Image (cartoon, rainbow, N blue to C red; front, side, top):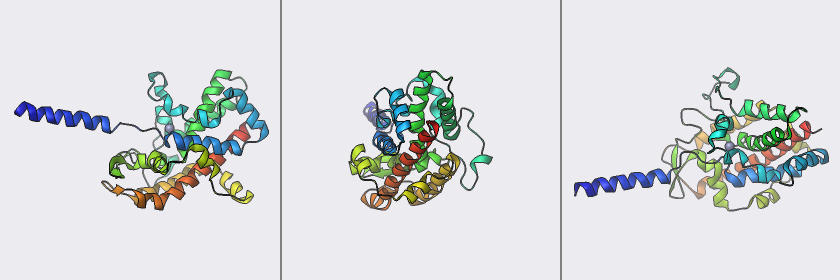
Length: 262
Ligand SMILES: [Zn+2]
């Protein structure tokens, strides 16, 4: 009897550890691809040609998930911390203790400098273009600019439509996946914006955009707490924000690429 019980417990333990993978891909694949697709709509002809040449026929959407695909490959461990930056609420990034291996800000800067470097090898340029597309996407997922103590919301356990999840994952992928639109449909359904609205989104630096996401992160943290049961109501309240973030990320990614290839 005793061994049956402990077998039962070990089985539960094993099942639980399968049910909660340690890390989830950021923005999910659909979100990242939508950002790539939206960015393509905003590229100048010159930038489009350069990007096409480097990506050998693949689209920005196609390469947008590359940053997550290499995460399980030990050879790329040094990029692991580049997907986010976490620092205490109410403090400034500039004053925060920096991650030694780099963070999303230094990661994006590094990619941009390689792409601007005429002496960089073609292979290096391709690698850093793919990574940049991914990182600018991640920058717009508010919980990639969150707090370290809950690992950007990963430790805020919630349920999503009665299934185990966490707040980070809800924002990465659950809301988008539940909506069940393809990345091309997401691209086709972004709000129509005036030239002025687009210009105001393009405005500012990478740092300004980081603070944009940071402000949103504060609202996201206030939107749910440990063990909350999230579902339709949460989507009603936040799906528009998700769409807006995908849109902003796409427009800003295009702006950065247009500048690199101007
Ligand atoms: Zn990522």
